[in-house]
Length: 186
Image 1: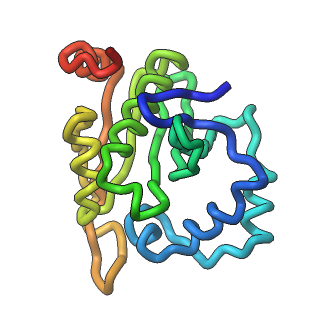
Image 2: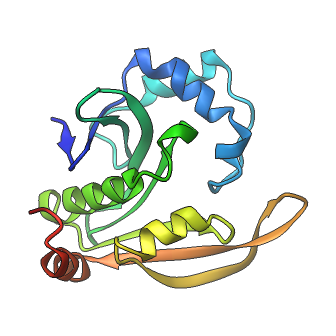
């Protein structure tokens, strides 16, 4: 099953995606904008990671493609799914710089919310953003309606100094109010 947004599709990660995924995993510009720590990734490690993915996990990862061209533009995920409390963590990257700044991030976040809240029946989604990642912060808190719910002070070490981790979230009811108010899916 593919998950379809306005201009994008989420699909399963396949072995043939490994070359582009490896390129993005080793791109310093991308890695500086996302959480965690990333070591250089070999093609062997990339292929092992892909082989470890399965649809029975509480950690789901997807390729993001453009609907019309089927061009692979990024990845997104729904991880740490907690079925008892109906919560999960999500994040996304747009791999190629030429695809950034076109509103695709909004489509990715809105599509993930629709899938999580309308299909899976989850109640709350969270994400984390490095304080200087203004594009992600604007995407989530702007048209996507997420709220900054907390700050972990001086959490990340990047660019020779410490930066805050912003914790953002949205509840199911907020999502439904948002799409009703702006008629997003019409």
